[in-house]
Image (cartoon, rainbow, N blue to C red):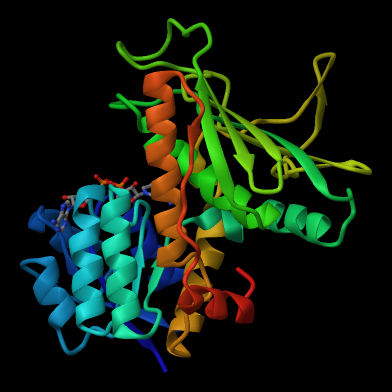
Length: 343
Ligand SMILES: NC(=O)c1ccc[n+]([C@@H]2O[C@H](COP(=O)([O-])OP(=O)(O)OC[C@H]3O[C@@H](n4cnc5c(N)ncnc54)[C@H](O)[C@@H]3O)[C@@H](O)[C@H]2O)c1
Ligand SMILES: O[C@H]1[C@H](O)[C@@H](O)[C@H](O)[C@@H](O)[C@H]1O
């Protein structure tokens, strides 16, 4: 069976997902698209040679008979409304991060999905599909370094544009919030934000870098440096310090050169390249599980946990205090589903 997919939002990542589903992946076909910039939506259909109808708006696309499943890649503040509409229509939906811009919004989605009675929502946290993170998780799960005690992480980008306010947390750190919890199978209990000396190379008003300190239920301490104007490259680091050893996130493969009296390897400069394979695996696994009527990837509950942790971290940045993260118990509805699948 071919999954007939409608895409809401044909901007940067929407175009990437359309391209990979059409040219690299199997089992999915883009049959409908929409964007508030309809000229762009038409241009994408033409450029990718899609047999797809361009809809006036996301709601009509969700209702369309030919659409089996929905991908939401519009701006963050529009996600909640399209995910809720997909649930109301009983259609599986893959939503790029954030699931909603507030924890309350995510909660509304969780409640709607539970009321519907079946999981339909997957959130686009692609790091769980990265080969490096999967290798690291295997080592942790197989007790290769003993019980994890501390994690030292970094999320660095050469530079950013239009990054303001708390986007280092809401746009960047959200990936660590999701993937680290998945990696160590633990929940966060508090967060603190340290603001070191500010780089002169950040846009006016942006505090860069920041260090975020998370504590988990088991007492694991996690420090993450977010530095989005580091100049030298896009660099994601994760080191798990356990009772008997240390496991590092593997570096992306790169040619080692000996030249001009130097031994060197390149560092990537953009996130698309760094996670290109992860996006492919993520969308392929989403198509495969959706056809079976299942959700295997990051759930609406995971999206909610990220939003609660994000809100607490913003408060911690604003107040300079250690802020408790109060998370309700995960509903059985999500626990049962998780027990059956691994991602
Ligand atoms: N998982 C990741 O690593 C990752 C990477 C990049 C972006 N994202 C997320 O994907 C989303 C899109 O990011 P982007 O970089 O593609 O942004 P973008 O601005 O390039 O594209 C968003 C598109 O959505 C359209 N749009 C906005 N409101 C709409 C509406 N109501 N209906 C239909 N279309 C609408 C815009 O016209 C635009 O074309 C964001 O939420 C972003 O955080 C995730
Ligand atoms: O910090 C960036 C992340 O590393 C990427 O994976 C994208 O999510 C991008 O939107 C963020 O700005």
